[in-house]
Image (cartoon, rainbow, N blue to C red; front, side):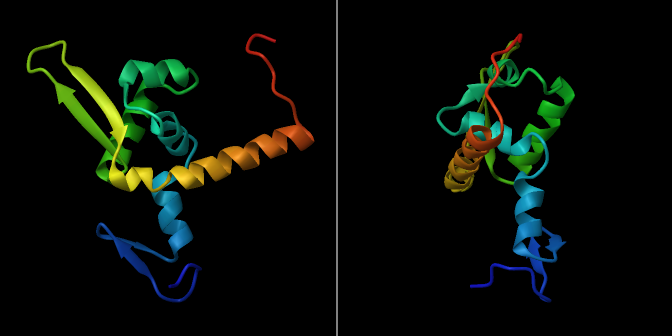
Length: 125
């Protein structure tokens, strides 16, 4: 199994990538995609719940990132009801759940960095 950047290209969903790292970063990279996946790893959530848990993300960015994660098959969007107000719930797909061990590794590494080089600060300080 090839796992590193080599001369072959990878094709997924009509897109070409120079390596699997590039493919992975396209699917989950950026400032918010992994954070969204992290907040959905334990349970499905409504849009406003995600906004509350990620107050620094703008509504437009959250909406766009959710659409991209849905398009790439990592997140499922389920609409309940036919008349407004409808209930929309986001959850990880089976494919999205395969990323949970990576999220847990990132969390562990981040906690170690804080322990060695930083500090947790209460909101408002």
